[in-house]
Length: 512
Image (tube, rainbow, N blue to C red; front, side, top):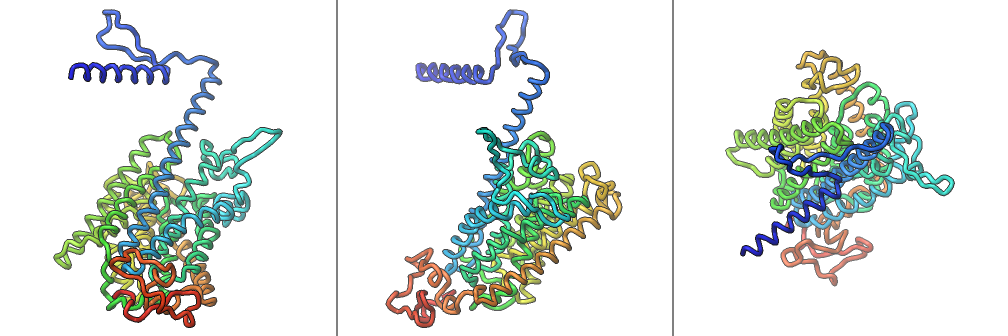
């Protein structure tokens, strides 16, 4: 036993010595006059200019690692969306939900690289759209046999993040773009034609989402007016939520969905819970990562705390709101409440104090429940509450900055002295309202055109046969639980009524 302890200590000493040697830290010898061992950094060598260059290079490296790691977290949110949506829809649509969430990321990667990023962050034209850097043709430069990687600030001076190359910045923004289209799939689940899903995902990645990005983050007209949206309550969530609402409305409801006023029960609450927890975890990339660097560690801490408090406020607010009315501790409402709080606090997480994050989260928890009930009353079938979580609460979070924005944290002439309730007057609230309203109008209009075109060519709603046998069987020839929900007999297929598709007897009906 003593030998094991000795070897363990020797191993620790060896590892510590390697670390000290690797990082260039020296330990002064104990000389009897010292009371503690002194650990000192080696003296800097070189001219002041050289030292400044070394520090700058180190900061660029640290910022690059930070943005990539947080971008990886944002991308991992695709897993959360997939599990959440799959858990909340009926079991006959589980395969379809998983595949749509998965392929949305792949398709968005290609189209955002080819078109979307240029529209979002290319050179500004009239404050409305970017006009270059398509296919990231300005991300890599080769001159006289030397290759270089320009910063995003070199490519577009309005996007002032000199520590990030275009390539690194692209990845972080791609993860956001994938999130926007994934929001929409939940509201349109179980009855969207798969080709139609691919088409609208591509259009969102190429046009509708990037245009709003340019307005707010790419040097566009809202950027110039001092519109505040730190991490995307408007840019990502309002865009996804409004698109989802229009899509669900134009699609019509699922068959056999039950009476209006009562959302059909989720088929797997374990999946939904795990998906929500992954989304909450991923949000620590979404919001803190939007600092786009580690230079202001205090800001990173504030954003992280506000993100946490917003989620907690939303979860608790929704849970108690539902309990007060039903005397039931409802899991689904609590899950959506936490997401509502996260969505709402995303815009202002860098511009508000922690108490305001709690307030914003609690109000979002009340809004999401009320919104779900309203959407049911007007007979729009949104299986996962996508509009209520992302659209309604994204709008609330955007406007909340104009109410409780902290004067010392807001920026630009429009910010004045902060939000209206913080003594700052109405200017910031007007800017926030203008930006939110413009986004809603633009996305609603383009979504009607997009989904209307799909409907015109019969690519919006899946074939009626899928309503009878289930979209998983019809579109994908698969079942997520074949031992529980068996596949129909292939011999009973009726291709004459649905060319190229599997068909079955009415016994295998959606929801049965």
